[in-house]
Length: 270
Image 1 (cartoon, rainbow, N blue to C red):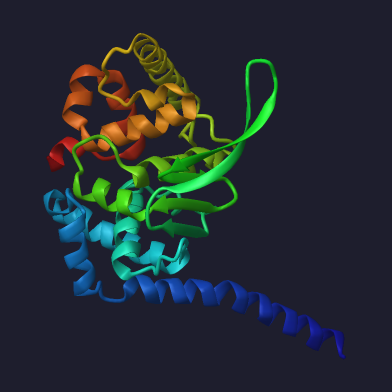
Image 2: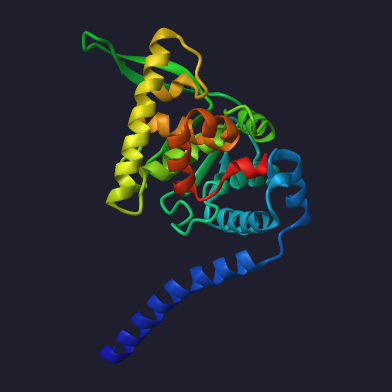
């Protein structure tokens, strides 16, 4: 084959490979938002009706993009429905409002179980002996592009958007956290000063939550956040979105740091 023809063929293939996904995404995002999806949002997302209209419209665009780019599958005999997909996408996209950092670029798959699912994991005791134990989970976030969720808990958390417990917000915070390459409680931030503010606020509050957990003292944030910095970031995010007024009152510095990161103020929705 003529080398010029071969080169032209390769260039055309490259252009098409780049253009076709962008064209399909643009078409998906520009399509009308289905009325039945609006009904799902109004029925299942407890805070949706309180969002200002600009944020509602932005959320709808993000949902369309999310549903176009991510693959949903059922496990444990569950058949995935639009209600499941839209309910999960809406909560995941709430973490992306007013932000232009990519819509979970590493995430490819969302796997949904009907309810809590059982996993077997190696566990090491204080003597260094490794054993395999089973436990039930409501959600998991993997750094290889997967989020796993229990649908019954997803729905309860979506409809009760004031109790500080939301498995979708929790697991998708882990996805944001892992965009740096490791889930360590510090997501991608704007610069050195942002990292200093982040570390100062979160490390102090993390230590306080650990102390509360050790002595059994009640806290605004779930004691599960005392497990490690990554879990603290996820639990703090749940509290920020679902109990914003109380967090702003009792954990002001932490609230301001999270407000700067997420670029929204959930107090305005409640």
